[in-house]
Length: 92
Image (cartoon, rainbow, N blue to C red; front, top):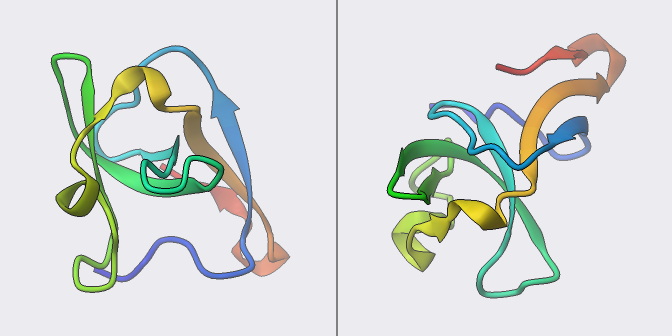
């Protein structure tokens, strides 16, 4: 699968306490480097835990590497790309 995001994309995220739905892009801290934020696709939500996966499984560091995360650490979901202008639009 081709990555949804490209280097240089500027995004609007929606913060919230609700758990993201499978298929959405979520913003969460990297468990290996807590000051770093990751944007990954939600593969599954179960028992208050979130399984995050990259769009390119061969080039992604995701839950297969660091395990599932508690849903409470998810900062929000990606809603809109505003730059570059030619790629601007809602991200579902």
